[in-house]
Length: 113
Image 1: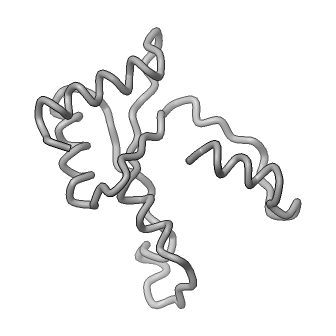
Image 2 (image 1 turned 30 degrees about the horizontal axis):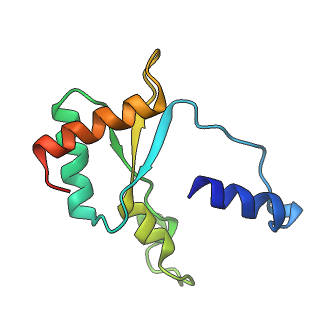
Image 3 (image 1 turned 180 degrees about the horizontal axis):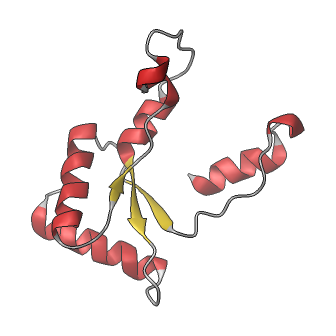
């Protein structure tokens, strides 16, 4: 997903919308397609209980308290992605692949995905 967004951003995003390049060097974004909010809560809880400092994904702007009652225009992608994504911390000396494999081995033992 990140590569798709970066590709669109580089090729089609209007220049006035662009932000400076941001590398999230403190977290790995992970996505499990079809994950619901309730399952995401269970996934993050299971990882936290195994001493992995995972955290839930972003909350779409239109669902935040400050914007309740505002008109919403969208396709539902933000809600879907906020349910399907969660974050793992970067662990010095551990590769992305190793972190992901560790997380999923923990999840396989605790929660059937």
